[in-house]
Amino acid sequence: MKYYEEKTLKQLQKIELMILKEFDEFCNAHEINYVVIGGTALGAVRHGGFIPWDDDIDVMMEKPDYDKFLLIAEKELNHRYYILNRETDRNVPVMNTHLCLRGTVFKTHDQKKVKNSGIFLDIFCFDNVPNDDVAMKRQWRCAWFWGKMMTLAEVKNPVIMVTGFKASILKAILLVAHDLIKVIGPSSDYCYQRANYYRNMYNNSKTERTAYFFDTTLYMELFNKEDIFPPTRVDFEGIAVNAPNKIEKYLTETYGDYMTLPPEEKRHNHVPDELDFGPYNDIAD
Image (cartoon, rainbow, N blue to C red):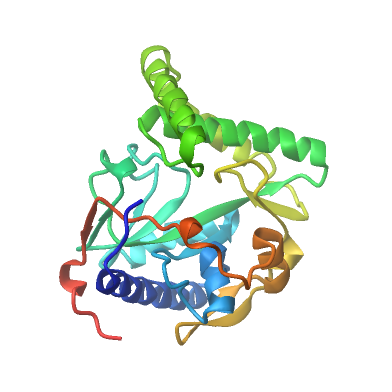
């Protein structure tokens, strides 16, 4: 486990807050729905902003807003930001999107092949899932499997959320699997296409639920749409941002007793191998 120097983490958080503010203003101007999720939503409620050790900002959009954002942002934000995902760089090993700040660098060990990776806001596309649980689980298993296969085809040592002896065993298995995929396939491009096929199965249908399929384990990010939208406004480090409509329910379903701090050994972040603040080294509060 690597750790930030406190000054470095605070500077990173300042820059990310600037990105979030400009992202919120852009989405409001173009009537694009989003909400903060994960540790960002938790931090807003429990800390009034960043969780003290957190180093990223997570937002989600449903597929129509996600597609609209990517289309407009590419044209209107490209002087200051750029979109980084599998569509813009085939070496990206994940299914989500980064809105990256030009002139900065934030590169983790699994992004060694990625040409440009700046300090970013993390955007997760949530897709429709059927109301029937059997059909939902079938869709989810397929999308999740192919998404993980794509990552494994690109990354020799992917991040895993286990420790100790289990981690050693799992890493050895993943290393062998990575080498096998490189020899006998399938290609990461094929895996990406299959993952997209399954994630989009119900995006032209009206459903009551929405999900992100590509988390660390199955069935982690499944929500009733009425609990998420329309969003409510919450304070995050002095700025107003969109959060799930029923934010307490969202946090309880995601974290359980969300107001209790986790033990120090479970306070994870994403310390990069390369970090450069560029022209934002002395950004003001």
